[in-house]
Image (tube, rainbow, N blue to C red; front, side):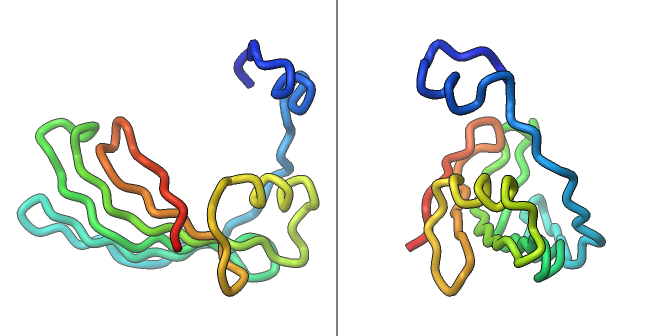
Length: 118
């Protein structure tokens, strides 16, 4: 974890936060690109630990970091997820509905904006 000048952050994180390994299993889904425009729809994880879905578009630029994102990410921790990992999931700033935390990622790959979903 990088050093911080913020005393509250230093008190919370100390020398870092150790997240236990989370076996996510296989990634399923599709990514289809036509003329530099991609549509992605993916899923990984399992309902008992951590489950994550990704849906959206990416418009590729000459430099990858200049590519445009419009991606919706939803995730939720399951009953078997370690309490430390569950706490980190809850502090992402994502909005929650139907038991899923949701984030909308937009902007350039090099400087994405993370917006809470309504």
